[in-house]
Amino acid sequence: MKKIALFGATGSIGRSTLDVVGTIDGFCVSAISGHRNLELLHQQAERFRPRWVILTDGSAAKEWNWSLPKGTELCVGMKALTEIAAEAEIDIVVSAIVGRAGLESTAAAAKAGKRIALANKESLVAGGAVVKRLAKENGAEIVPVDSEHSAIFQSLQAGKRSELERVILTASGGPFFRMPDEELKNVTLAQALRHPTWNMGTKVTLDSATLMNKALEIIEAKWLFDLDMERGELEVMIHPQSVVHSMVEFRDGAVIAQLSPPDMRLPIQNALTYPDRIGGGPTRRTNWRLDQTLEFFAPDYSRPKFDALKLGMETALRGGTAGVVLNAANEMAVSAFTRGELRFDQIVPTVRQIVEEHDFQPEPTLEELTVLDEEIRTNFRTPEN
Image (cartoon, rainbow, N blue to C red; front, side, top):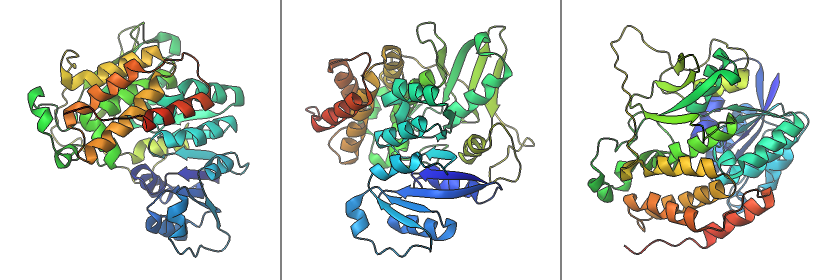
């Protein structure tokens, strides 16, 4: 049995992971963590009976009356994540915490030489160089869970890394792909949360609406696959149907793509079972008896609608502290939008300004990244409307 530590069990990726583990053989859940949705976390603990339940929000933990199954230990605080990630009995760490909060536990799993099923893209956006170095030094294995990066991971197996021409990252375009740029200033929170193809958490859904989620994925792809941004080894195409999750073009002109219905349980299952493929899981199947149309559009980087993609490319090329600043500024800007303090069309320009004006460092340590992240959040201010 492979033993899993699932960090972020109550989020959309966490729930999907438990769907997968509950329907395939060979895996058991040894640890689960949650932040504020303690009722759901309690239900998950009752069903899967892990050895550890981790409550990362100490104040919320005090307000809940816990009666855990026999043999389950209650841990409180973010530090418990890094400690359990390094436990000898853990085989796979599913990194599904939303935001930069997942960086330390992902780094701890890399340092401990674990397989990391990586859904927390912010770990690589903020600390890609650090996490990759720790993984290489300690024999850790990073298998991506994001559908796009899972598609790239699978497609790259069709050829040698030296034969790669480029990676084509696909993006749905979000709910406003066909909306005129001048109308973006009137977008409401309710409109931004209506994603046309994916059912995700609030933060990821809003990032998809601004296309900032794809900017984060650009940076993540650069680190995951050691892409040469100057050579143009990464491009983005808008694909509204979200069936082709990404593609890889080899130097002979062959393009290999991974296709499947938009369902995160398939890349999760692949990350857990790689290099094997197994049947019997909960994933949706493609119905090839139905007529289907697949569309692809090249983004126009001169338009404000696609500025997040342009910023993601620039940040991936620059490296250093640019990623952690972009991520922190974006989290704060999205939060301000949900509170009505920032217009939808101001989110990306606000993030860009903060990235361009920060005191750039080319080779930060994990500690320096943590300090800078806090500084960006503390000093964040919304622009004058």
